[in-house]
Length: 397
Ligand SMILES: *Cc1c(COP(=O)(O)O)cnc(C)c1O
Image (cartoon, rainbow, N blue to C red; front, side):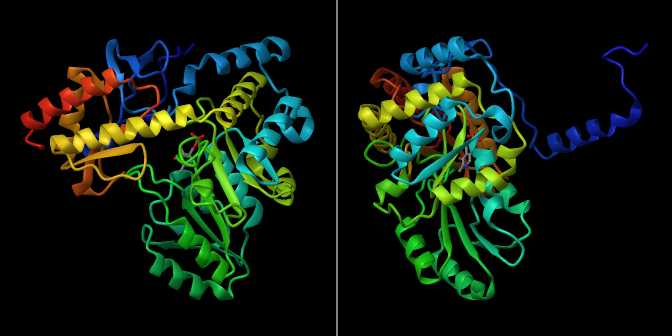
């Protein structure tokens, strides 16, 4: 008899791999939240203010979403029973997709289990050998992985470098099809893609335009419709990916495009063909979140008010935050400094993750603050006082 704690020698190499990560200062450990997600959380037993969640609108525990989710679970159960193309498509899935299409002002949407799989499903349904995928160098890992799965040629352009995008597009004219894909909002700097220029280049060089608006959904546009609405580019971005897991507070991803694109993804999008969809409770929460946004933009407004207030006050203190969004990077330079700042913030009662190389450049280590509509003025003022104190202590301001 072997016990669960015994194993063969064959996995010993894993210890060496872990040690390598530790030697390179890339090793991460999980911190654990007890209780619910929100602006005040308990992390590893310590109460603190949360400045690291993507819970932009505070919807993770919104009573309307919770109620919708509980009701759907009680009425319909906890499982979808099969993949969507067999018998796993429930009325709740269809209804959410229709609502999302209205929200995004497009013909049709298809919901995936996550934003991560939505990128894989979309890109791999339409691109193939002989085509070329053109990607911003700072695009999200889920785009990178989706592109890796594909047999099309791949080209990168330097982050938001429109001259380079144009020259890549010129060289790509001999390919069968061209796809330009970009994040709508870049999550490390909080900057927004130059969508009007990207759209114009796609039109000029006959390329499909795809935007992954994970950090734009629920944040940009009058009611949180995303960066396409923000720039008034409806009908000119061919494929939009959104997530239900960030501002919308729950879980899931979707592709917003044409009815034909939806039909093709149902036939070719492997994460949907071969993996079970959300249970009714998850779908109902997302439906409630989208309905809430369409009816009332006060949370989106509150989010922006908070982001503007916090950024302005931080810059008055002497920090130099540059951002187009509620993602506020406090760039401090050295990795060690960012890690010390994050640790001292936690000591003082603010949870804000350090982000270091290789996620960002070696000399651009930072503590990244994610603002939320759920932060009160009292939360923000408390955090500002701590930033004032630590800024002096660590000679950052
Ligand atoms: C977070 C993120 C995703 C993944 O979304 P999930 O719903 O969490 O899987 C995809 N793309 C971008 C740009 C993201 O920031």
